[in-house]
Image (cartoon, rainbow over all chains, first blue to last red; front, side, top):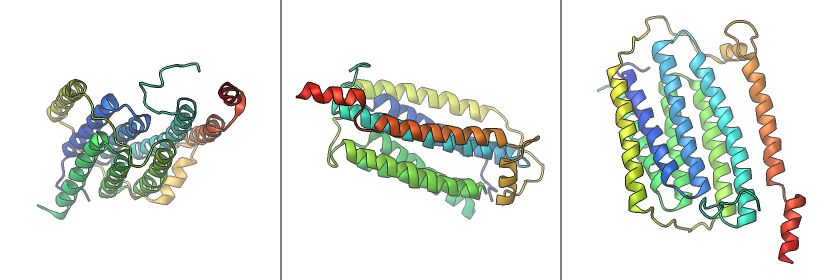
Length: 105
Length: 179
């Protein structure tokens, strides 16, 4: 299935995606777009796990299960994050990180 | 160039272009749709690596679930046509510099390291094996993480409902302030 594609290609692709996510995390001000950057980062790590599993340890399944659990954790994280974002919006009527700077309302 | 390589190049171009668009687009709803493209292309990569189950999970959970959740919350909290102010050039320049230097260091390190490709026969990843491993309690089993993740999911769901619930002591407090 993956003949002719070295492992490096997958790793470089994942590294690029990871740092694009970091860039979004640093420059964005809106909470939802920050959450989207975090999703990008989680996805790139997942690509790494699966590529390592397929290329270096094809007789085992550790990487695949780790990827599965990362996806589950990402789903839980997104649900809680969006609940918090909606609560912040209700209190401050904005989800801009620079306007919502008080911990106690 | 084989069909495999062409598919890989296609997926990587889609992933990189649309992830850059996701973090730079000035319209939030478009950014969410670009994120959807990235996630679908990632699931294509999983299909190429022959992990069909995980690719299906990626499609249903990420592309189907999380992106829909994000779009819902965008519609709840922002106007559809709301545009962000462009990021200041100073901030974007320094972020880009930091990110580019990190990426260069990582990629040089990756290229420098010689990974020894395994010669052992690949295990066939079918649903039978995945189901057995997820409930297997001895060596090579994942029963404990499976249970932990199910408790985590329940806790996250309850927490999300409690946090996003309307009212409560603080909610009624803000109402009295308005009156």
